Length: 253
Ligand SMILES: *[C@@H]1O[C@H](CO)[C@@H](O)[C@H](O)[C@H]1NC(C)=O
Ligand SMILES: *[C@@H]1O[C@H](CO)[C@@H](O)[C@H](O)[C@H]1NC(C)=O
Ligand SMILES: *[C@@H]1O[C@H](CO)[C@@H](O)[C@H](O)[C@H]1NC(C)=O
Ligand SMILES: O=C(O)CCC(=O)C(=O)O
Image (cartoon, rainbow, N blue to C red; front, side, top):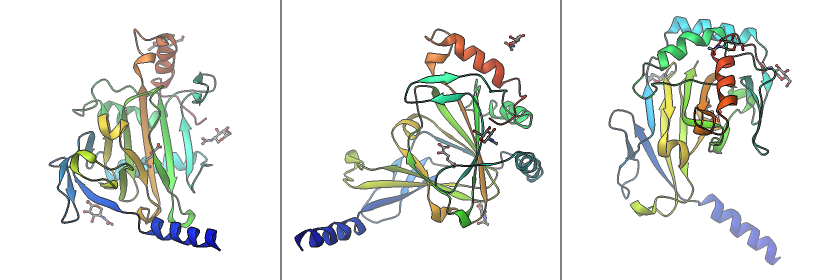
């Protein structure tokens, strides 16, 4: 009986979980308060470029992607991966099988490199994810690996608008927010978003089920960490990955 009550109490508390909600403003780079008792704050580490690709390019990209097969992934997502096989637990990278990023990405990568935050951006992985409301697609809050992957995570958002939710479970004590904090970053269709700095390493990112209203596809590009760049312990492997990746002769893994 007691445990049943305890369970109910826990459920009650869970439902009452307080979350402070903010909305990211790309122009001022502020997280704007949605509630009276909180103040807006600077939110560094997000770069957003609207209309990164044209409608025509979106059509061509999507038709190229849909010519390859999609693999089932977690949480109702489907996936196409162009990159080395990685075992993050054992910190092992296998080059075999990786044939490079797809040809259609070459001009997009060149365009990325012209963005103020993306000088010298040389991706060694492209992961395409396909979200659909009928499959309840979502991605839980997480931080991307930083052993292999470098500072900048670059995503092109296709087919529909969505919201990337940034979260800090422990709140922001420096702002007097003791409970979980969410910052909603609106991603318009055909925009490019870069996460770096605090938005890359401190805040988790997620796509909530409710924020997938129509089919939505994204391509995320990842660069190497310092360990795999010249001067790093695994520089040779890094050079090999770059060589393959930037040949743009890829077929999916
Ligand atoms: C998508 O977002 C853009 C830019 O924020 C907005 O102008 C447009 O109306 C939105 N489209 C839909 C279908 O909600
Ligand atoms: C990549 O490797 C191939 C074969 O090992 C070599 O011929 C080529 O020059 C390399 N390309 C670059 C850009 O390093
Ligand atoms: C799907 O997974 C299989 C098995 O891992 C792999 O051989 C295939 O290339 C994958 N396809 C895509 C599009 O990622
Ligand atoms: O769907 C997105 O935009 C985010 C994808 C993501 O977080 C990931 O692939 O790790």
